[in-house]
Length: 542
Image (tube, rainbow, N blue to C red):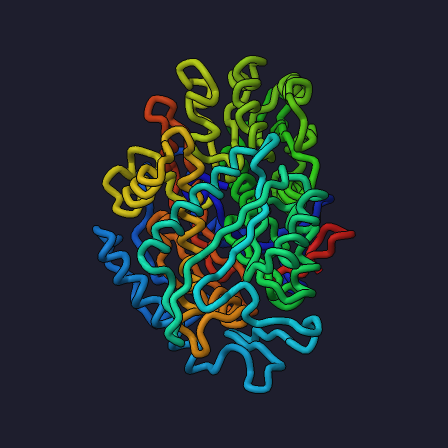
């Protein structure tokens, strides 16, 4: 989550590299080596503060058919031209590879061994359900109430983006059709028990073409059902590693930085700062506030996996407290953690608790005791760190660190001259939304672009927009995402690479600027994360 795609990804290991679990396990060595190589042996805090590394090729996992731009486009016309070229390249790969639904209607094929046995779909499965000659319906379950209601603003941003697309004539199809996008969002309050009936409603009553879910527990409760029904569940709004499973859950794709990769970056940071983090007893006390659900368990599991193999594991004293997602306050667990006198604090939480953690740390002395404090990637923007959220002059959030999922914080003044940021802001303003107050609507614009590109590619493939073409388009995606910082890639490659974005960057919040400032290089891990067949009972990748 999110501001500007404070989204995005990597995974726990396959059989060749181990798996990470709530109880520990082993870390993905490809990811760990990539993180260490990017950060080097120097202290991260001393790294350059330039915005990002130079752009690189658009994919490492697949042979890209388009060269990377020499620099970011300087106008929306340049962006549109680049995207058109990149979409055409994906469509050509699909045509040359004969990807899509077979002539006999039995198999869907895509890159790098990606296949779906359509005979296992329900009787009467409809490849174009939700897509008429003039309309395509995209469903969404999202928290618009409760402690994670701030993420509900994403739905408003998506709606306004597609208002612009529809006003321009919608999405053109290779068969000559032109479809407008109908986006249907329903509030589940981040309660998985409410998500299940809403998914049923969206698929059986509204008959949507594809369905997006927000939240790890919410997606976990529904992805078996949607895959059994052969309903696309694209770009889910959660960084759980389980979404990197193209074999067992081919209809579900993730989008944002995987939580266990984020945990590896935390670990690398601790190792680099070990000498200054040690207390009088020679121990490094790490305090973590963990949300008690699949989301929080993915975080703490990833961190324990790193810890289990760290050369300084014996020197680390890990103290944890858990909170329920709907907890009205977090005073007691934060007070307990502050009493441990940690040298580093990590928030493995989301939504309103992120704001509460900042204010509590300022009030109970934790901010003064700990040398470093981390917010999660899902709470990177001003919706969580801005002075109108934390109160007073905003200094309570000053110097908090975040492992940003390589997304641009589109509300920051840093991007005032960025053509994409200006477009995102302007279309929201024109739609009657004050993006400065409803910052997370900018994330909605970012996510809508992602949906739009997948629809555009699928529509341009042979046969036009179908569910088969849509999922193949996603599994072959290889484009330059305008919501990501330069140097971050946005691609998947069938069964070989199941994660759209595997990039991160360490940032530190500057309350005076009301923006997060980069304090490290872009950590680009494209193609390094192993696919993950998640075992829900054991909480590990098989």
